[in-house]
Amino acid sequence: MDEAPTLAKRFEEHRGHLRAVAYRMLGSLSEADDAVQEAWLRLSRSDASHVDNLRGWLTTVVARICLDLLRARRSRHEEPLEAHVPDPVVTYEDGSNPEHQTLLAEAIGLAMLVVLDRLSPAERLAFVLHDVFAVPFEEIALLVGRSPTAARQLASRARRRVRGADRTPDTDVRRQREVVDAFFAAVRNGDFQGLLTVLDPDVVLRADLGVVGASRVVRGAAEVARQTRPYSGFAGSGLPVLVNGAPGVLGAGDGRIHSVMAFAIRGGRIVEIDILSDPERLSRLDLSGLDARPDEV
Image (cartoon, rainbow, N blue to C red; front, side):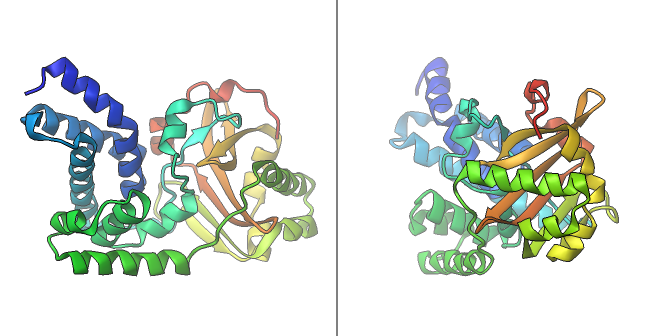
């Protein structure tokens, strides 16, 4: 068996990859970290001398842990929020956080995570492991307790649902930031027509306050434009950042960050706006140092 320090070093070599797998499975950074830590505990209690492919072995362990967590969510039958925004990965616009860049190596936006939340646990596992991380269906079948053919069907169903909801965003970050800036200029000036110009007719806004009855989903350009007043504070004191690789803004005040606002832009128009204002979840995000940047929005 490997000596403990050597085994720990080998595990750390794969931590970034494992966290990326868990984040896509769970949409929660804190739960992803818990899943990775549990994988380490299981490894440390195992005889790793027979493991030829440690990365693959650990990927399977993390996937199984995440599958159990997803199933536990379903079994609790908690009253759902009207809008649930997955945990955002917030970085400087210059991409200067290497750990977060590893997490986003296979870029995934908040909108995609929202779609993944609608899949069954088994569908999500099959899609994430196979389509994102190229895990063979034979291995996925063992995790979900089905045949390889059934595992392939799970991934296929998930893929159809993902494609059905696909609104592939633009990739030019600078151009996207210009659209976001135009949005906030219109908000700041109370320019309703200006808002309609930058909003896609089928735009969706999700506001997750962490409270049943307060969180909401708003659809359609006119309706979203009419409800931008509560977010006018972003226009004056927001901190420009990247949220899951796309332009976003932190709302800060009284020495703390109180909201994260993310945008998905397609064809030069905003197609989705995701706002996380749940104080408990925000307190668990790694936002250290971001509030020290000068206001630019």
